[in-house]
Length: 310
Image (cartoon, rainbow, N blue to C red; front, side):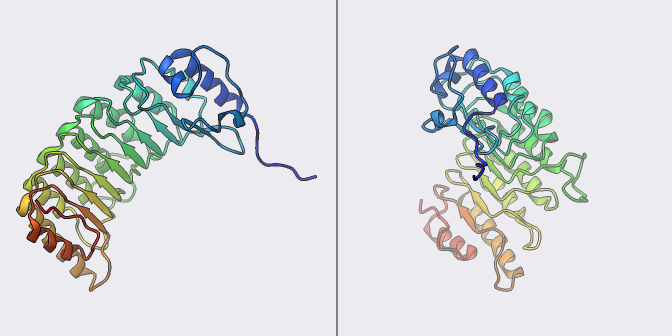
């Protein structure tokens, strides 16, 4: 007879973690569609309609846990997350969980790749703590969502320091020995401003260390000064890894657009008609004007670039 490689029951450690979560916080229990302090099923089939948790078919370990956007979570038991060695995706967005608890949870999860922390009001100081205590020592997180957290330029500088401290390669940019593999960074609605944009631009310019492919900076009060810094960070075709840059709803204006136009011309000139790393640049609602927007689209060699007509 054939032997099935798939399990039908939740791994004992993951099952214990679930029990700890639903016995500690009513909001967490609700997200898992359970009643607080009640025993739940350990059969994976009974969880198929619950989108907030996904299990590995072979081991029964939890690989995704979504506790976000269900309301305020007052406390999460760190010991529950110590029982989730295969957790890849964690959503704590919109939970208002204190930064010290967020840090404690993230430190406990060794395999996290996708982390969603949007709308938690961590501020610049909280972002700095997150960077210094978690991100500076982490090489597994590839997607980080910290949108709408009011991190400001202080938080952006802390994020830039994480990249600049990476030892992904022998680099003149390195300041310590910690790797950083963040590839998708969501920073929308964080009051980044020109100072924050300049800090991020410095990180993007450190091509040996920076692994960022997608950078989301919409609605961040970035003006022409910040736009010029970001444009200058694009570098040359052989070095830059950035593929998509989202700048919707800022104030880069014609001057900022001209800086990107010039940088893109240089990038594509270096390819001798080939492709540059940057494929998408989104700049709608930036006060650029139709003429400059069309010129920027031509510089990007792309019909899909969204240009402002305001």
